[in-house]
Amino acid sequence: MVSVTELLNDPAINAYVLRMIGEEGIELLRRFPEGGEHSDEELAEMTGVNLNTVRHTLYTLYERRLAEYRRLKNTETGWLTYLWHLRLDRIYDVLEEEVRDVLEHLDARLTYEEKNDFYMCRNCSVVYTFADAANWNFECPNCEEMLEHFDNELIANALRKRVDKIKESLGSA
Image 1: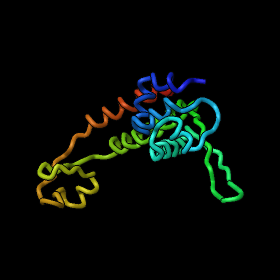
Image 2 (image 1 turned 90 degrees about the horizontal axis):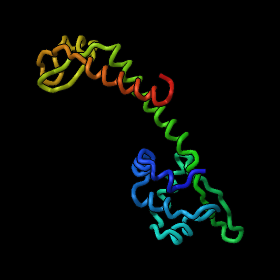
Image 3 (image 1 turned 180 degrees about the vertical axis):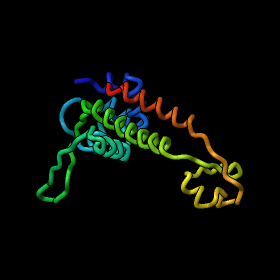
């Protein structure tokens, strides 16, 4: 089991987590007691982190399966208490899943760039597919200037390189 400190010392993981939960969220992780389950109120008190920040951080981590809770109901009052624990051991799986999602989107965009011919209005800087440009007789629907062919090879090459690099990092090149 990798410690929170070890995980956050990895620059890539630290950047990912920082973007996800911010500095205060990272501070909560650093101060999170090891082992056991704790309510959000207990965590706020134990760590000195604002209760709203604790709740926001826990729910954000929960959405990514990096935290879990167990719900207890007080039989007298009917109040629910959520007891939280971290599941940062899943972070590598979560990161891989997100990278695969990005790859899927980039791959779809690359396919779109490769399968279409584009035309651009130099006046409006709007790019249209061949089908749309042909529908408007190669005249910009906004300013009525003639559309010019747009060479998207730089975009396609950049996407191709990014897709190949991601596939290589995932071991599926």
